[in-house]
Image (cartoon, rainbow, N blue to C red):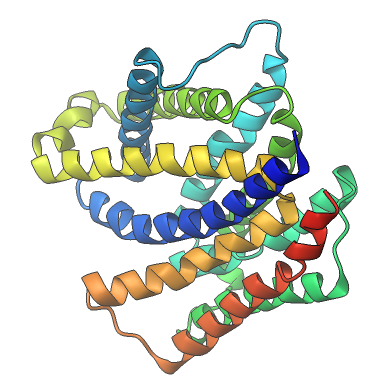
Length: 309
């Protein structure tokens, strides 16, 4: 690959990182709305089912090709065990014993965890300014939730521990995806991950309903056209974020990609205020400024590094 093509790929990756954060931030609203119709795990199952159906149609239509022959599939299995399986499972059970605010604060730690793992396993080097910028973005998210009067309490330690493990799982995925992208295309990684996510979430939902004796009610939410439309939208989002996320991690460092996660918090605040008329206080603006400044600071030296590729 020429340096010019590589440079364009890096620029596209950064553009997609911003788009990805915006899409994820907006999707929080639709996830919240879908939970009015189904349990978290059922919603996740239908969401993965929708995404896998979309990817299957795309593959059958020839929009992308899949070739897993002779490739290290065990790497994809390990990757999928971290995300989406590990991340969503730990997050779902963690939020049962912790508040959503605690989940938001702990999720903001993902860039720091990614930075640590990337430096250990990928030998990625970051400057002092970049480290401080990542920390600034984390503080921005934490500041927003703490000012809302929802810090991390010691009464929910089980949930907090599970959420920390979810954070570590996402960081592990971000680091491992950089290595896996050498063997598989973005579409192959995304198709496999979403397919495994659908199979495992379906198994969990089925087993849960069997245990509770409520198997017949599993399909009840599909009677609502609103829920069906929400799931279709979330399926499209799942496909888009999977493709974008895997492409981004194939082009830029995991530590740089990780900080964009916190940008979705700013988008979700803005979307909540606009669509759901949720109140916006002064601390939202200050925290958002910290987050944006952190994202910019982490990626200030893009130009010089592109010239060195």
